[in-house]
Image (cartoon, rainbow, N blue to C red):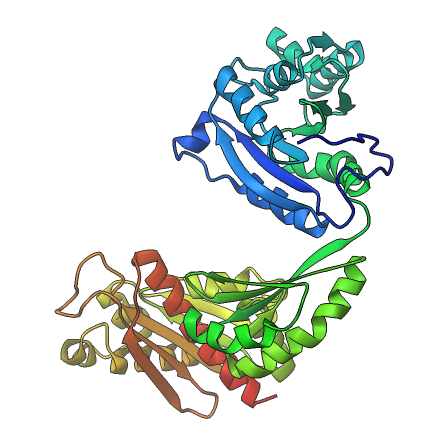
Length: 432
């Protein structure tokens, strides 16, 4: 795609009113073999969205020079900017420098200052520098060099009649640092003023179609708002994307719509933006001055681990017990053996007893317990997905819920944990 101006000090590379189009090109045979998940591409797309840049393509290419050059040519015909993550290391399969140089029709040139920086870095680490690391100091002629965060320099170069290519290391922390320091400022200048903000409403206890039935009419007559849904194992995210002159204006423009969506979805909303269900729970435990303990069978500690990831969780979470085996329920939490024999380890009465035992053993105000059949086979005649969750209240009451949860093993465990945590959230809201 021909970009008439490549002046990154402020020139716009596309007609007025047309978003800058970008593609993310990920490098490495390991991505195509399924050995790694390409989290860099997701991260880059998120950052582009914040800058008002429209990502049109995600493409992964294996470590083959000809295929790499073909991929660059394909993308250059379709977008203004290509963002490459990876392939800047010192080994023979790191081909980003060679591929970009070939696509631009230039040679690689040696940079004495980069060589010296490499030598100095290894010396500071007290390590011998392999000679092949000097490959990292060879950059396509004419490129803007980005100083290395680790050992790999990045660069920006215009190829094929005007498409701007940015190459950064694939190591995430190096990529993030180089993005913030070098790439984002250039992209902001290229894209011009504007910011795109995505507001997220976290919804639990409702299906995606049920949520869409409520939310879609609210967004239908609002120009400039893009609605999407992301169904995850533990929740459905309602994503509202708004573009404005800057981030503050985008947030102000989106706030009335977010409030309307939250009002219509009611108690199904478990969090907004960065605040997750676990964040809300820790906040509510603090606001009510109460504590919780867990007894987990099917989730084997997953619920308490989710809470513990939130800073400040120690003020509300007292602890938990993973009682995965049937006899552990009796040995560790004194669940009556007769109850286990009569009803089975996955049952309402046993889950009730576990919730009360967790609350009493830890001296907590609330007790959460879960049991279930996560698969891959039935258990004691119960089909896969049979689940129970219980909440022991501060006043001595216990409520038990159960249903068959769909999904594979991991999805069942995640959804069961969410059901139990959401039950506590709803009850805590009644106490605030």
